[in-house]
Amino acid sequence: MENTVVKRLVMTSAFAGAFFAVPLVGEAALGDNTLKQGTTHADVQQLQSILKQKGYFKDSQTTTYFGPITKKAVMDFQKANGLVVDGIVGKNTYGKLLGKSFQELAPKPTTTKPITAKPASNSNTRVMKLSSTGQAVMKLQQDLKFLGYFTYYKTTDYYGTITTEAVRKFQINQKLKVTGVADAKTQEMIAKAVAAKKAPTAPSKPKPTPAPSKPATPPASKPQPTSKDLKFGTTGPEVKQLQTRLKNLGFFKYPMITDYFGTVTEDSVEAFQKAHGLPVTGIVTKTVLDKMTEVENKKPEPVKTPNEITINVIANAAELMGTPYVWAGTTPSGFDCSGFIQYVFAKEDVALPRTVAQMWNATTAVSKPAVGDLVFFETYATGPSHLGIYLGNDQFVHSGSSTGVTISNLTYKYWQDRYLGSKRINY
Image (tube, rainbow, N blue to C red; front, side, top):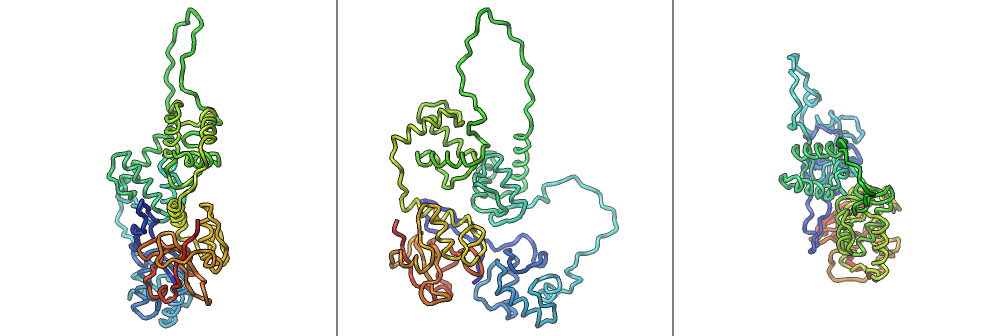
């Protein structure tokens, strides 16, 4: 069953899943993009709606994903209208669907009137917001990562809630209107900040100093960083290890561990240094690492609470939105339903068996699901054969065979008819 790619989950202390929303508005008019199987775009939902009105799209719910059901509906329409039956929605198919001729959909010829060049303007800058995709989104994330606001361990071409939060932090810092939307003004300010940070600092002209009459004693100063020290801008596994240690000591508050030393890591280091009487530099020297080891040896190993595990599991799941379905898949390159569940819980050191049936047998039945519980369904085989993670508000996240990782609603008839019950993991 095809479903939409949704906004990444935003969790608060009352993480009941009430903050999911499904953006359905695309940034281009229907007919601008060629659509085919595998495409995820708002235009797909408009296409499905038109095919549904014409009696070709049979599914009860329209989505933004072009899967096998959509392809069959397109091919049936093409066959009925004397078009090439390839399941691809190009200009000829659009023409029949929208009641326009091929010429109407073709680009209009340009006039011969000379065009006077105008200076570049922000008016043509593409506005990026939650659920936007493309290379421009990846470039935005790279710039925000360079500036220390985007702290996820890798950049992608998807504008999710981590990107939204990074934009919000930048806007707060620059005293812009805080929307989380990368509008023209925000992008202009980001570009200026990147350019300013990359610009070399002009060396100051040294001032002559008189020779001392006796050997001078060098003044006390803050420790100078070395090439081995960890500091703002550093990347690698050492940063991930540092963040984990700071998190266990209660200083790193961000929910995700990354391999990038940004402002969140720097603030955490400074808080540790201040708490333990070290010079507050934000730089991790051998002295800082030794102090961390000393504190760790006095501190018992922290144990995650079920609530912390649930929050992290759902955050892990949200980062995998749109990952394709792959039979027997267990990695971010593709998941089947149980492989997806096993993966997101394993990241929080919670071991689950491999198959849906085994998970059903290894968990405890509950009368009503809570956030983080597993919901089971009987789909292609007798007994439990599909499952997802309950998010609250009748929503659950899962890896569907025709949608990949997505969010669905328990109240839809398809899922109601196949629902077996919910079970809780014993942490």
